[in-house]
Amino acid sequence: MAAAGELPAAAGARLESVRALAGLLREAQPRAMAEESTFRGLLEILTSASGEIEQACKDSHELVDLDACLLLLTECFRCLRNACVECAKNQHLLRNLGLISASVHLIKLLHGIKIKEELLLTALRCSLQFLGNIAAGNKDSQHSIWKCAFPDLFLTCLTYSDKKVVAYCCMVLFTCLDPEKVREFLDPGNLTVALRVLKVYKEQLESEWSFLIFTDRLLNSPELVQALYAKLSNQERVPLLELMMAKVSEKSPVTSEDPNVFMRHAGFLADCFQETCGAVLKLTSAAGAEDEEALVTIRLLDVLCEMTSKNRHLEHLQALPGLLETAIDTLRLTHLAGKQAVNVFTATHAVTAQEEISHPAEGFKSHLIRLIGNLCYRNKGNQDKVYELDGIPLILDNCSIDDNNPFVKQWAVFAIRNLTEQNERNQEFIAQLEHKRLADSSALESMGLEIEKRDDKLILSSARKKPS
Image (cartoon, rainbow, N blue to C red; front, side, top):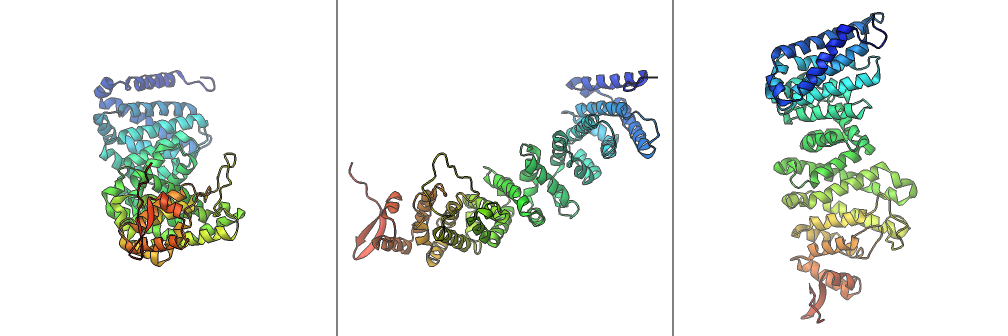
C-alpha cells in the first residue's frame, strides 16, 4: 500500500503519462496531429474523477484520495488547454466530444469540497484556462460554454478570493459575450453576474478582463446600465461612472458607432445629475466630505464634461432639456456657498506645495463652467439662455485664480469665448459690465478682448496688438 500522500504505482504512471502529454501539446505540430482517441482518454479520466468526487461527497467514509484525483484532473485540464491554442480542429473536436459540459460540471462540483486549497485552486485555474482557449475565436464553443455555464459557473468563480481564478473566469465571460448574450443580463437573476464583475473591478483595479467586460461589452446596452445603476448603492455607482468615463474617453469608442446608444447614455446621466446635483452642497461641511451621493454627483459631472467635449455628439447634448439650467443653478449655489462661509467652494490662493488639495470637490466649479462652455459652443439658443439666467456675471466672477479649482480661469475664458461668438447681445452685455467696473478687464484682456466705443455704443472686440 502506498504511504499517505503518495500515489499507487499505476496512478502515478498515469499521472506522469498525462503530464508528458500536456508538455507535448505545447508544440504546434503535435497539437495539429493529435487524434480523437487521445481526447477520448482524457474525457474518460474527467468522467471517472467526477464520479469519485460525487461519491466522496455523498459518503464521507468512502476512501477516495481526493488529492491524487485533483493532481490528475489538473494535468488533464492542462492537456485540454494546450490542445486548443490556435487550433480550430481541436476546439471543434473537444466540443463535439462533450468536454465543455464535462469540464463545467467538474468546476461546479469542485466548489466547496474540503481539500487542500492550493490543489483546488490550481485545478480551477487550469479548467478555466481551457474554457477560455476553446472559446477563443470559436463561436460554437462560446455558445456551448454559455449554455452550460451561465450564470451559475460565473456566479461561483467570481466569488473566489484567488485573483487568478477570478481573472480567468472574467476572461471566459468576456470571450463568450456578444450583444445577444448581453441582453440576458437584464433578467433580474442574471444581473447579479454584472454586479459581481463590477465588484471585481472595484476591488482589483488591475483586473483588465473585468474592465473590458464593461467597456467593450456591457456599456453598449443602455438598458443594462440603467438597471445596474438602480441596483447599486451610491458607493458602488462611483466605479461604474469611472468605467463610463473610460469608455467615453476612448478615441474611437464603440458607442460612437451607434449614436442611439450614446444619446441614451447621455440623457440618462444628465437626468441623474439633475436629480442629485444639490447633494454636492453637503461638501461645504467637513463631515460631508465623504458624502456618497455628493461623490456620485461629482463623477456624473466629470462624465458629462467629457461627453460634451466630443463634437460628433455635441448637438444632442446641447439639446438635453434642463442640463444647462442645472449647471448654471449649481454653479450659482456653490459660488454663493463659498462666499457665505469658508469651505471647499471658497476661492483661495493660500494653498502651498506642502498643502496639496485632496478634497473630492476639487475642481467642481471648474467643471461646471467647462460644461456650460461646451453646451454654448456655436449654439445661439444656449448662449441666450445663459444670458437670460444671469449666468454671464456668474462666470465672470470666477475669472480669478482659485487653488480649490485648478484651471478655473482658463475654463471661464473658454466659456466666455463660446458665449460671445457671433452673439452681439452677449458681447454688448459684457462690455457694459466692464464699463461699469462690474467685470474684470484683466480677465477680458486675457481672452484677447477689449472694449471699444463706437457711435455711443460699447463693443466687445478682439484686442489690438500693442507695439513692442
